[in-house]
View 1: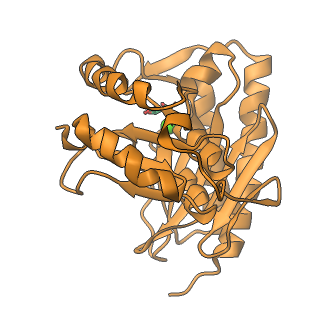
View 2 (view 1 turned 90 degrees about the vertical axis):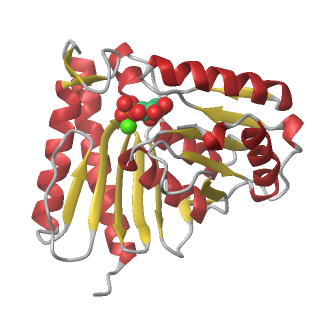
Length: 268
Ligand code: IPD
Ligand code: CA
């Protein structure tokens, strides 16, 4: 079955805008408290995460009743169209919980060949990133691209993120010790989806993180790739915690080599 991915991108964009407005309103009008924890005690879920995902699932079901949905908070549904929506209602829940900016809504549509349409919306900055396969990437409607002339690794600003599990964080800190002396500086802003969009618009030169979920990275991966970044896993599909690297093409190999020398791509 063929799909009009630009239409699906527009649908994702509309729903991400509405969902982001809902989450932003919840943030400003209600006391935000965790209602549950997930992988560890510091991996929180708020009622706003759940309400935002419910709204997204309702809108997707209304518009595309035969598509499948995989949502971070469990709004999963089987489908028959060959399209699967990957939904992260609030990526950067810790930022959201603390009242920090930099949390986003991420909605992506995939087929057997991968993600083909996506929207990532940052409601605190009112910035919408969108992309569809072969159609480039936009920020608030304007085409974006990674910097054509990227700096050497020693002048590169590199984003990363950490697991919610303390044993994995120990390993991530060891890898960071090897990366930090090799680059301009490191950022840990708290949303993988937004981190990938920052690579897309050239605000980061690169971003790496291990162990992300499909909903964390689906939308941002497409947006970064459509903006010209090289985006790939450095670990084989047999690994459960795969290492993702997104970078301006000329930087990718050098940073991959540093990560590899630190053993980041051979982690269990
Ligand atoms: C998390 C964020 C964070 C990343 C974690 C993710 P959540 O997602 O993307 O930046 O470092 O790996 O789990 O829990 O805020 O939806
Ligand atoms: Ca997430």
